[in-house]
Length: 208
Image (cartoon, rainbow, N blue to C red; front, side, top):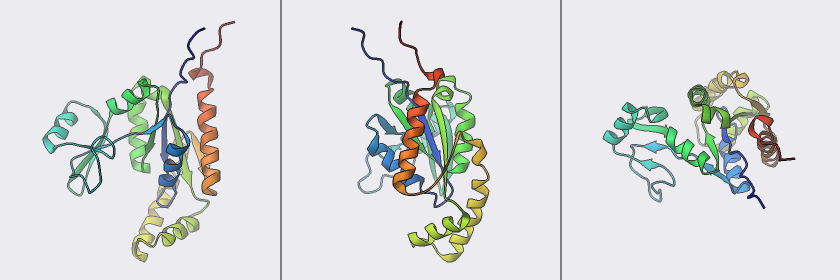
């Protein structure tokens, strides 16, 4: 009897405007799919209490991070508040080649860069599926941000203005997911994943 082939792994990129709910959705996906793993980012910042190298981040010295930048190892990288962050090409390829579905949780600006960069790598391009998650309206974005209770009125105003610009990018993704309940968002995302795994371009017909 022939060994059962592993299904072609996917690189799932989920993006959303501020308050869109992508972090919650990504946590649900990791719990729901045993074969799905999170892409781990490199950073030069010091570990916080409870954080583990290779689990939360890959913690690198600044000089090591720079060497990887110069070698072209990163798909994308940026410096925020004096600390550098980057996503290694090898991090994605290694997990995909191991048969794992890889999940990317990125903001809209980061998504644009990653979509462009993965398009230059045939193996990543073939695996990539992009999903844009958005609330039903800007009023709902504002309501969600207010319910968080983490930002001032001025910060919320700026986030809503940014969300308007971010939502306008939805056409750059494979799927548009209008957010409903957490359960419904998860159900529809799982349906997308299952459908993508059955695409002819990713499948091999049985021998007959």
